[in-house]
Amino acid sequence: MNAKSATSRASKTSRKTAISKGTAVSKATAAKSKTGKLPEWNLADLYSGIDAPEVARDLQEMDAECIAFETDYKGKLAENVAKDNGGQWLAAAVKRYEAIDDLAGRLGSYAGLVHAGDSVDPAITKFYGDVSERLTVASVHLLFFGLELNRVDDAVIERALLTPELAYYRPWIEDLRKDKPYQLEDRVEQLFHEKSQSGYAAWNRLFDQTISGLRFKVGGKELAIEPTLNFLQDRAPEKRKAAGQALAKTFKENERTFALVTNTLAKDKEISDRWRGFADVADSRHLNNRVEREVVDALVGSVRSAYPRLSHRYYALKAGWFKKKKLAHWDRNAPLPFAATGTIAWPDARNMVLTAYRGFSVEMADIAERFFTDRWIDAPVRPGKAPGAFSHPTTPSAHPYVLMNYQGKPRDVMTLAHELGHGVHQVLAAKNGALMAPTPLTLAETASVFGEMLTFKRLLGQTKNAKQRQALLAGKVEDMINTVVRQVAFYSFERAIHTERKNGELTAQRIGEIWLSVQGESLGPAIDIRPGYENFWMYIPHFIHSPFYVYAYAFGDCLVNSLYAVYENASDGFAERYLAMLAAGGTKHYSELLKPFGLDAKDPRFWDGGLSVISGMIDELETMG
Image (cartoon, rainbow, N blue to C red; front, side):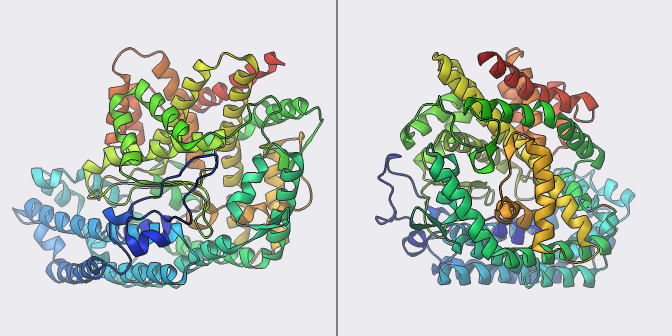
């Protein structure tokens, strides 16, 4: 398996009923509120439960396959690849390696999804930890493969790639060899790999369990983080304020734990980066994303310079709609005074998204519909469930699963559209196999954001009431600001934390000062940052699980703005080209995938074009009064 696969799949990502029964929907948690009954996923497509005999069988098979693979191939690559039939020999090895990766992906994904559904249940936590540990121990036997393969001479590899069976894997082999300059000797790589379970993976688990276990007192009730955050979008100002203050209070009580987790993981990354020879704190992420540092720097520079004409200008407008000069930070995402009230029921949300998808592509809608009909979605809010939302690709021999915490808000509909975009992308890319289905983060957010845009544009086109059109447009601007401005501010925050950590530990107070600095710069003068906000960095999971991931959202949003402009002006065939781009998975560099659309992310004007779409929407809002 890919050295990164087992632990990354597991850490990306459930659920007590699914464990014991495999498919059952819990009567105790079935949502019968204004949203209607919400679906819970059927994880039995992976395994029927954590005690299923198939889990033990597959773990044993994985152990045996990994040991056999090492016995058959370790120390033999250079000699055998250089032979006349070297291409066929290596192709057979890669196919075996891929089969193991697929099996490990199934095991790791199931453990991760079960844990995401209930991260506080002791039995689930033990299962997740045990499977993660088994995956790490087994994959130690595979570490040699990529390391040895990268030591084979370029000319020998090129000659072997003339064999058709191996040529199929050229994208994976070329991608693997990009890691060559940062590769360490085998025993050091093995040590890093084995220590990950007691190192960063353990701290990831501590974060997940801590954040899921936090409780926030709002209106006399003890709430988990997801419903508390949801109150920040409540129509009642007193509820938003109460939620903001409750978050601040609980975060303050736990600041030492979160500061320790942050400091430890930043130091762990610094050690790895130093040993591997990465020059910049984010270079390992750029390499993983297969994107050049200068392209990311251009994106970040463009967004930061656009803060005044984007977030600063919009929040000033929003404060005016509330007849205020400034909005308290807990009112930043408040529903607009003229926005429609009420809860969007789950069947209506489903219909909105699928109708929008079908208007673009029947194939895209048919794939998305399977998430509903085949129970690939887990939508209710539950104690212990992971906050936020994701679409987990699992492994090509299975299918993706979507987790969200649906509460009937307009933003939840857009979240559904977003995650189904991921899901469609993952289904289409699966045909490339376990090694080449994964998509770099630079393009991983493209399908999701495009799905949001399709849904938004359809709703906007159907809205005739002027005030509701204004509310819809403002809501989209807020989402884009949260995706572009906020994520670039997050990236700036991470850069500052990781850079300063090189000189020693940061106190919770110092981390809070850096947070307030980047937030103040990005939000602008119309947002009144009140005491307590200095600790709101604590609940962002990307800082813990995927350092520097966040710029991928801004990358994807700006890219989709440009892509959607091509779609609106395109002749027939755009949908086919778009789905072909998604189906390519990780087989092509992002620059190659964008060529059919006439887009070049290396062009300095590219990012400004994407940002101008947001600016143009704010222009329109200003004319509406």
